[in-house]
Image (cartoon, rainbow, N blue to C red; front, side):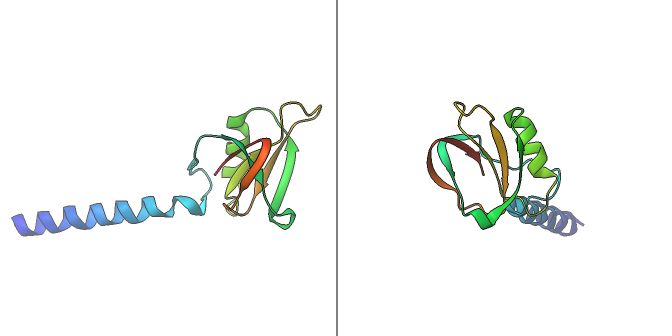
Length: 103
């Protein structure tokens, strides 16, 4: 009986680790992001899923959560007259002065 319980605990922990490893797949509602990092935001144009007016960082990542192919939420510079939130289908987002990204 003790061996059976131990086995169940080990299997449960293995499943939890496997599920945690999926966080880069951005399943809707996953909320799996780094904090927004400054001076990060360059991405290839063909990886842009969508863009809209920037509201706040939380709204940008929540919008990304609604798209299963979204890998990063990117925000344009604060000095832009019309700031935008970009949804990106790659986590390969690199340096870009005054932009920020949550990957």
